Image 1 (cartoon, rainbow, N blue to C red):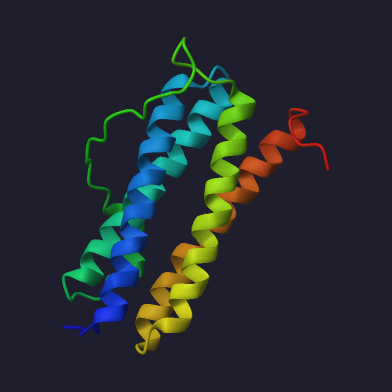
Image 2: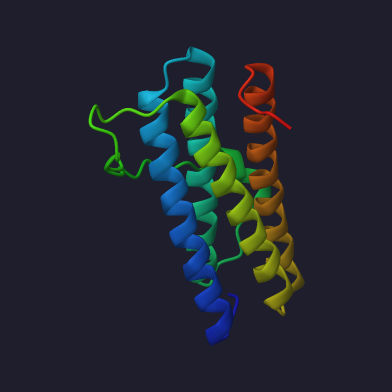
Length: 153
């Protein structure tokens, strides 16, 4: 059983909100994307975000997650689609990629801050593992955008 102080609990609750938002976005965008490859990319990232959420819930429940079984535990939690600002309800594949790349950059940075605030080295490792996943999500979105002429450096 792990023990969290108030600040650590608050940081995990913030990360949980970020993961829930990522799940909503990836689920919604996987349904809206026009390109099949992009649909699969978003769906895959959404599943990993669900694993992150499960991990955070375990930590908040006082349990140290088993990172070897990380891929096997994907709870199916339904999230309603996000409301789109466009009249048709759809945004372009490029806009979805831009939004998710920005989201991943932000979420990765919040994990970076949280990692430095935890006393337990095991929890720091768990959060570092999640942060690396977030960075890989951003990298795969970047590569998709670059290969489809959506990223102008």
